[in-house]
Image (cartoon, rainbow, N blue to C red; front, side, top):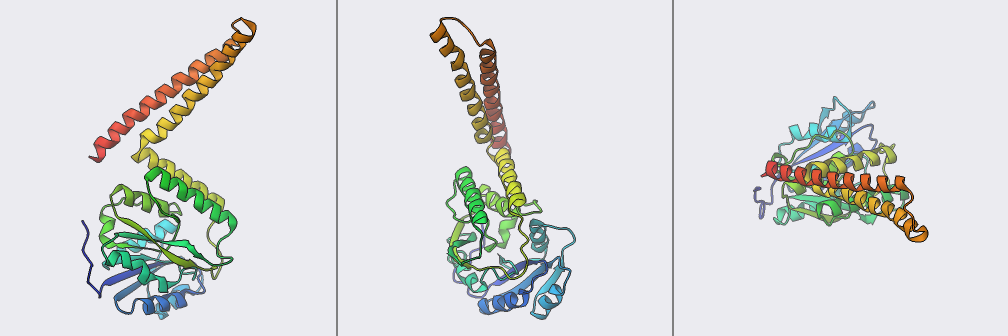
Length: 300
């Protein structure tokens, strides 16, 4: 399926770094070249800055591509068009990630143990690098991804990743914002890509934060639901249908208890509402079954 790199010590590697007013970008790029000195390295900065970030990036040896639109996902979708290496590495320009971890990130790919490798920031999370709110949000999203897509990863939102470039031929990526990180994992899983995760370090960022926890978290959960609808509709609609049926049964028990206690049929409203809930649940469940059949036929 993918090119075999085992035993190949001199690879063409493209490192993509999206930037927006990044004071530490020069240090990041210099460390990338140092970490990958044994390989042919092409560093591409996808820039949306209003300061001298692109100038400093070029001085450090990177090729700068100016991002026309906005968004985390759009930056990488732009960068993918210019990536020419055998392997693509994704990295932030704010020095939260240590470029010296890149060789470890590449190891599972070079050993033919994986095609797509994620960095687990929680393995060596430095003090002050991530707020408690962001930790909770990350853990919650990761738990959903693991449960819904049968994965066992610890950090679904990590921005430090490496993958074989020809993986892009098998995945459909189109989200422009922060949900791109989640979409990438789900699409890789759907395509049967071998996914691995290795421990990395994560430091407090240099410069201002771009992440908006509540807004980006809500959009990521929306992406999970959309991907679930598109690839596993039975789980989504089946769960909704099941909840409606159970709710209908519980509501229907109220007039039953009333009849047992008073020996008279009361609460006709509850009875009608119970029937409506159960019928609605059955319809949603049937829709999920039909959608699941169509999705499986489509993917076949």
